[in-house]
Amino acid sequence: MTSKRCAAALLLLALTACKMPNSTTTVPATETIFAGGTVLAGPAQAPQANWSVVTSNGKIVEVGPADSIRAAHPHARVIDVHGTTVMPGLTDAHGHLYGLGLSLDTVNVVGAPSYAEVIARVRDRAQRAAPGDWILGRGWDQNRWPDKQFPTAAPLDAAISDHPVWIRRVDGHAGIANSAAMRAAGITAETKDPEGGRLLRDAAGNPTGVFIDGAMHLIDSKVPPPSAELRKSRVLAAAQKIAENGLTEMHDAGAEQSTITAIQQLIDEHKFPIRVYVMLTDEAALLDAWLRHKPLIGYGDRLTVRSVKMYADGALGSRGAAMLAPYSDDPANSGLIISKEEHMRDVATRARAAGYQANTHAIGDRGVRNVLDAYEQAGATPADRFRVEHFQIVAPSDFPRLAQHGIIASMQPTHATSDMPWAEARVGPDRIKGAYAWRTVLNSSARIALGSDFPVEDVNPFFGIYSAVTRQDQTGNPPGGWYPEQKLTLPEAIRGFTSDAAYAAFEESSRGTIEPGKLADLTIVEGDLYSAPQSQLFATKVRYTVVGGEMVYSAK
Image 1 (tube, rainbow, N blue to C red):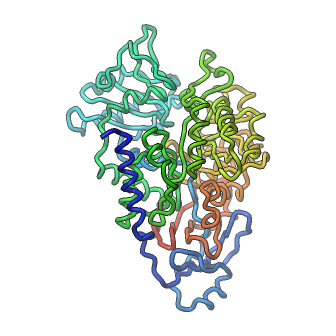
Image 2 (image 1 turned 90 degrees about the vertical axis):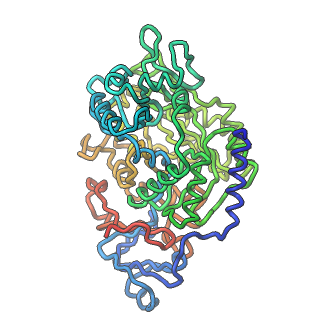
């Protein structure tokens, strides 16, 4: 069966399954009162102490002072939430569901202070693996190492020679392979750089083991795919991790059909705890199959497939982000173009015609400009709600173009605080003023949907809220914040994770605030979020996560 026919068959199965009863979550008919907390009904409203929220049949029935609520609903089940803040259910507007599940199941090298530590962690896994098994992992960042140089295969070969090894960089836009993995992929000095990708090479032209952006497929294509059951178990583990962190919904930035199928199966089994808004990965057969039909909205009250995810360029950390001028610390390099402007224009046009949203990864200022140009050529209007994912390094003249066409900036605050030790060296003192520029975006009258890009960054949304408000790391550095003029207020940061994230998914009528008639999605955290020191926002503890009135996570 061709890939196109396979994708079409899978889609037909998905759409047929969609005709099943719409709810896979049993919601009790009786009312539930979340009683006595400090209720933040929406980011534009003041917190109300000793208020309650009434839910029934998956929706919010009433919100108001605790005493009057209790009197009006005498037979309701009561959950005491005194000492907490009750918020609209938080949404991560840009994450990777299967990527998170994979990271939980493979070698984690996040935070490794040296390449030697990366190798040690990989060796430990290899010693417990069956002979010849691929060893997979993620999380290295050469910017954290003393020499800040990209790794090479030779030290990895010396430690692990009898397993193919493939470890992705923390941003997912580069990877290091050992020689066994390169042999499996047929990589030699004659291997050409693919379009939109690069193999790092030594002075003699031999691949060193690092594959960037489009070149990663050369190795990825040789990694044995997971079984359907393994993929499903990873998707479930990721969804549970997301719920544990207080998130009620995430926007999955580039899902394959196999992941969508796993989500549907888990929903049908009454096991899937969160809501997911899917961006289809930009793969021809997948788009051909889905764009022949209307979007899939509200499958099992949990899953919506309504957007397409493209890539304009790579990432800043691996110098693959496309820049208008060369990198300040690599004058021969201006980054990589992954998708040409014409392709992005054509996909955006097709998506809109089929009722889908266009969302495009763009990190460098050239990447951002190319996306904005493509969207303009596609005739983007505010009704389309096209998005630029990351919108990270931006030329001053391009900020106003967001509001002109109703384009949404989907940004990740923890990228700024992770990148700040080295970002200015990458792009120089002038371009850095247009980097991670949340205040500039808001001042341009555009909307920001906030997320984390997990597993690139931690899934905890309070790390992102803290970064947005302080522009500091969790030790409080730098004093006053990094380029503090770009800080957000706490209500603005919460808006990015609630009502503006809902707007970015066409869901503002059903999610994003605590109002009668909206879905009963709540994030309930310890303490009073607004009176706590901002320096401790990252330490916020989740007590309950509620999706459709169902408590999907409890800290107790």
